[in-house]
Length: 129
Image (cartoon, rainbow, N blue to C red; front, side):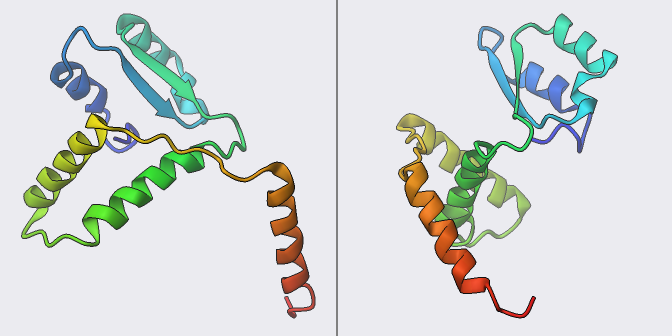
């Protein structure tokens, strides 16, 4: 969920997630998450633990990849009659995923990534832009 869209999301999550569970929030490193109001709310709700993405980091790509996997595996392949059906299907898919989660692991070495970049640069050099 994106807190930026609705300020009631943290309140809703606090009510809906079992009280004994810790809630880990992955948030961007933008300054709004560090305002006095947000810091105060987090202090009053210690089970919420924010994890700020490092500036310019690429590990957030792993989170984006998971959402891409969700979109590819379920949303694009499914037929949903309405928003409620789509929401129910997404929740079912996430529940199924969480029963046997699969971590995303970088499989390329730094050398392989740099070689790939070099090939890309050679391919686009002289492309006229």
